[in-house]
Image (cartoon, rainbow, N blue to C red; front, side, top):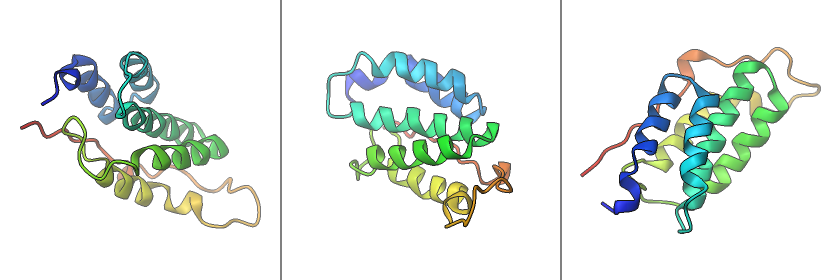
Length: 128
């Protein structure tokens, strides 16, 4: 594995994400992301955006959640293979399920939509 992807902040960010500590996850991954200069920087930005989208969804900021979800998909979709042992395509599928109701066409602001904790994805990291 690329030495760049052995940074402990990746594992810490994923732990925070999976513990649903989205704001803290954002901080840790953004610290790592800010140092990247490689193509994969967009992938890590997508992970950060996934955390922010879930944070907003959890807090009831549905517009912000939807915008970050769409941005997340745009960044992750450019990577068909796992990056740093993280399957971005699987995360996209899981997020699609989680955000499905929010992304349905609504005739007015969807105040009734809430984050379903049972649909919140986890990010798994499989290292060689």
